[in-house]
Length: 257
Figure 1 (spheres, rainbow, N blue to C red):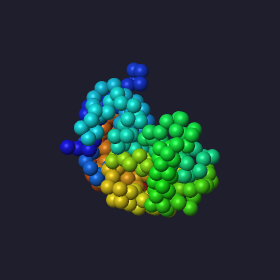
Figure 2 (figure 1 turned 90 degrees about the horizontal axis):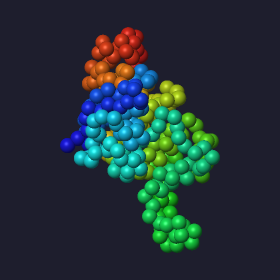
Figure 3 (figure 1 turned 90 degrees about the vertical axis):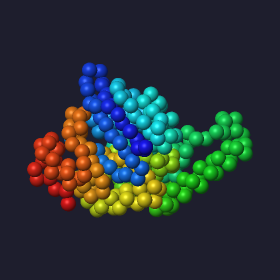
Figure 4 (figure 1 turned 135 degrees about the vertical axis):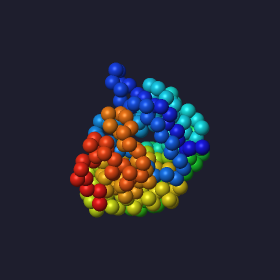
């Protein structure tokens, strides 16, 4: 059984068809990409999978469970984590506190236990602190734990956002334009980083990206959207040479190296 199945999903905003009959089977351990021009519907699909939007038509099934209609926190608890096209961190908060926030949907202590610092509150907060520091250490960010996140470089903030997504222990990680705003050196490091995350945490990764160097180098297969509809899918080599993709998105002289 596929980890994620998206079957005949369409979505409308009012009378506008934003996603047209989208289908996907994503298997455990895969690293695949979703590409296309701006406004093609890529982030809308991520929002449908994570519950920010509810699909107008079709089914989204994760490990045998239907996701359509479920709220984002429930979908996250089932094992789907994500990052966003625009970094969504609390700049004035410390790096550590930004990661700790991701654990809070799973706490079971009450307001009274918090106010009185009762044992269950102390135990769970200690566990959250230790797990957050463990993640920061794994991602080589522990020295920035107490630093306001706004003081970090753009590339480091992207890493913090991924660490926060990993705090929910996802089986499937959705990365929305992780290389946005990065220079060529940072993109090269990000490519290695994504591979390391997949192998270290035994994850399945689905990413949206405009940086063709990254997409063509690390993705095992691609789907291409244009105006909400799938116009091509296959290996990077197959997609790169597809006439429809060249016309709609890549252009004849696309540089991918």
